[in-house]
Amino acid sequence: MSKIDEIAAAVEAGKAKVVPGLVEEALAEGCDPMEILNKGMIDAMGVVGEKFKNNEIFVPEMLVAARAMKKGVEVVKPHLGADNSATIGKMVMGTVAGDLHDIGKNLVIMMIESAGFEVVDLGVDVPIEKFVEAAADPDVKIVGCSALLTTTMPALRETVEALNKAPNRAQFKIMVGGAPVTQEFADEIGADVYTDDAAAAAEAAKTLV
Ligand code: B1M
Image (cartoon, rainbow, N blue to C red; front, side):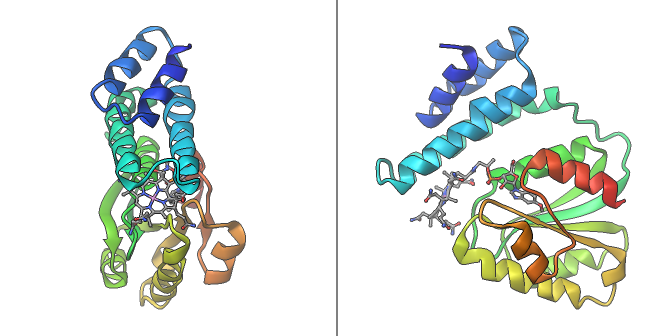
């Protein structure tokens, strides 16, 4: 079994104490940090999601897998080229109301910070008013909204609608993403940009400013 497969297996099994050591070993062996993240952790969470969908595992197992992934991300993060010394713009980012998923949002933040942005993390279950209030900061160039549940897509729509009515709307762009979100949905609700992963979000952010 390759080191990356070992990481994936440990994430799937929710071994939060084991994952950081395996990630360190993979880095020491010269594995690409992006591959560790994508194949060792993000893909593993995809497997966890499938198992949950098929009733093979339940919420607690999903939660421990998420914790294990977070521990692994902490180790790989400094190796992804994060450099906050130069700021090219300010972004605010949150997971919409009713939605508690934050791994994807945190990865998007990590990649966007690596691209040179200052990111204000509004957290999860963010009410519409909090997004609008944060967007009122005259330095904010991008407002990012993440949604992971089909049941929170209406909250995403309402958030984007409210942001579109903000008096300072011309000053910022609205970026949306998350597993159930599509380009078509993003266009329909009036978002400026949709991206399907964290790396693409960082590229899009750079293009926007
Ligand atoms: Co939840 N969950 N969950 N969950 N969970 C999903 C999303 C689900 C698909 C699992 C499944 O059924 N297969 C399903 C949703 C089904 C649906 O809506 N159709 C689901 C469900 C049902 C639920 C609950 C309702 C379960 C329950 O209680 N019965 C519940 C809801 C709680 C709530 O939010 N109110 C729930 C709870 C949880 C946990 C708390 C246990 C845990 C979250 C822990 C945490 O985040 N801190 C959890 C987890 C871990 C998952 C899965 C397994 C993994 C999510 C994840 O972290 N993926 C997930 C299944 C899956 O996704 N395959 C699932 C890895 C992450 C890197 O990917 O978040 O997609 P993702 O982010 C990507 C892109 O989407 C994109 O970039 C990221 C990085 O590349 N992206 C953006 C994300 N945001 C972006 C924003 C952008 C741009 C790109 O611009 C602003």
